[in-house]
Image (tube, rainbow, N blue to C red; front, side):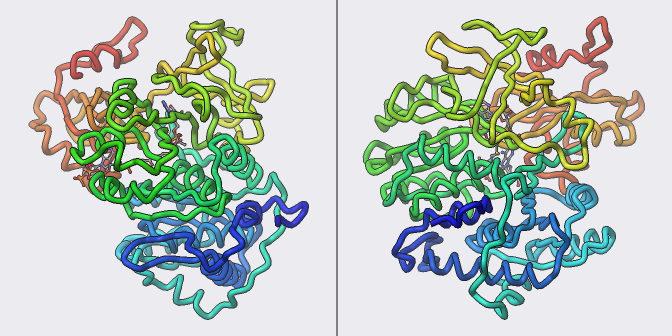
Length: 504
Ligand code: MCA
Ligand code: AMP
């Protein structure tokens, strides 16, 4: 039972652990598995290690490591010790990591042993007091140091408003912003989803998402922990492996690209998902066509939901009722969602407007960006999501576009501004525009349109090569088109819609 008055997220999750602590919590395959007892004891050892470092209150623990059960233990340990967990995409390169370390000023950085060579100088430059390594093979200095610690730890008492995590989201201005999420924000959303999606003892989650984002780290893991359910754990998504493992699972969560790839597998059919009671899709729009093909093939209707790093989950299609393709469903209990026109007036059914949200799940603000935080909230406390939407007659929300210039590729967000600034800095580049074009597998693919100086002799491959290794691979344009000039409107603004049409 949860300790009364303690809002620590770990305490909330642990209250859902099953009575049989010797049973399996995380099954990573090839005989590697953790019982609930193991999870409690190992996270206690890491929490004791963090406690011994005597970090200041609110200290950030920045983590860029390959997916492993031990990475989850580190997450849980950071919560238990009352520090702030800061997950980082494994695709990020040195320039990107340098920015996050400079901005977040973590007291602890944990990187994979293979990256120590380039992370160490970054940590030294920014005077990070503690640097550890953690591999996906249980190697590294973090577990070596934790092995000397006690396996008992009294989870720190936290208030609902205390920070639990900072999740960086790319910025429309090119600078990433750290969304500050409290124990109360994440915990309230975990409880709502637990009830809404009917998590129950005996569920088995097939977990193939990355764990440095809200989808894989919060939405998927918390549901399983709160219901004392086993997770079948794989380091990354692979469609063939998913088809092989799905018969053992009752719940699967993925981004639309994963559903498209499952449908490309000839062996994927109703029999493969005979035990699955819930397929959830999110992070990017699920095409109605994918929804229908999936239903025709398996008899299962994918449940699409909508959320953001700043807010966790906001809306969901119904569990028992209707699931409407092309919509993201109904506002979750306790979450206020409104669609407003430019003057802030609520839109009627079918009218397109800006989506704004309020609720216990909505974040505390952007890390060290009070002005930006202020701009993103209305006077009455609603957060401006930057998404455009409309209601249908039954109160289901559709996302019809974004007011923010953002590309979502395979469920990862890419802000054109950031890529444009890298391109514009290159010798010989006059200006650039980065757009998303429809892509069968990734939903959208990143494409750059570049104007180069008359004497500059660039080709597409050179421009791509110049970005590779400097920025995360999912941000690197799949195609680069060299043009004489960019189309502009009378205000001088680049007409990206024209480019999207031309290069689709
Ligand atoms: C990999 N590549 C990509 C992507 N992923 N390129 C563009 N977009 C991507 N998403 C690159 C690889 O680096 C590789 O490049 C090449 O594409 C081929 O990789 P492939 O093997 O085909 O891809 P993969 O490694 O299988 O990855 C596809 C994936 C993955 C499984 C769909 O992208 C993924 O796990 N996406 C999930 C993202 C996610 O969890 N988002 C949640 C955000 P090279 O050949 O050069 O190495 S949280 C969120 O949005 C909110 C809160 C929400 O609502 O959930
Ligand atoms: P992030 O800040 O990385 O968490 O990305 C959040 C954004 O992903 C949202 O603002 C939406 O634009 C988009 N998103 C998430 N779920 C969906 C969905 N089901 N359909 C369309 N867009 C989505």
